[in-house]
Length: 297
Image 1 (cartoon, rainbow, N blue to C red):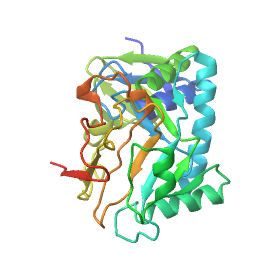
Image 2 (tube, rainbow, N blue to C red):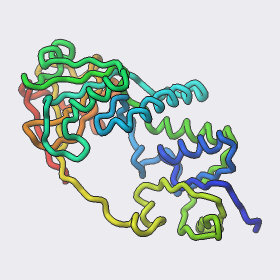
Image 3 (cartoon, rainbow, N blue to C red):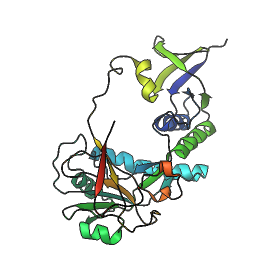
Image 4 (cartoon, helix red, strand yellow):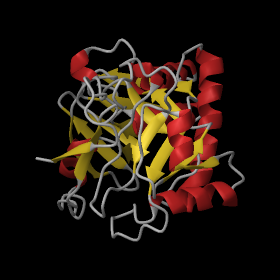
């Protein structure tokens, strides 16, 4: 059998892998993409309909240039493929100003989002609780809470994003092998050996974006379990009397309630007509302004 050699092999073709494959192929690199399944599929972090996107990143200002560039790239991909990917419906983050409750990457999240927007001149509005209710009557924040509204925030059709990346990668000459399981990586004397169930492939470099399968390929120290942080999942019910069709509501993040950790809830216009098992909006409503919390299990 003829020995195959590539400049780069990308293992795992979800969001990160498919994007890497496209950019490598576009740059003229000889590149192979491998996935044990057939992306987009339901075995990775990009499974499902939508993921949030916004420009002012409260988790850290170092991420803002990446977010700004990503929005440019999504529009470029839409132009080149005709795919419908990015919907800028607006993003609303609700929380208390001056929130100093310790939460990994989330302490002072609303304040940090506002600071990032101001630093990078990102269009945004800071809303009082009364203004939130007036503009988005589906929600009833507490009096001391504020909202950070970013018109350019929104959501992406994530599985379609993966499909578009792979389409462009093929167009630019990438080789893609699906249903292929990588068993082991090894040193190749200046390169890398990629051992599958059928053959050994040789590459100058390897990009491993295999999600939960990465530790088994990379070994120590990547096989150490990540540090877990307890968090709750805020389930926000609609305001009483609001219809379940959230036509005019942007994506909503509830940053914190009464000093307890909360994950973010994303409600987008795209959720209309989605099967009830996949909806994040709870119906019928309970009393306005009340929130129910369930602990992660």
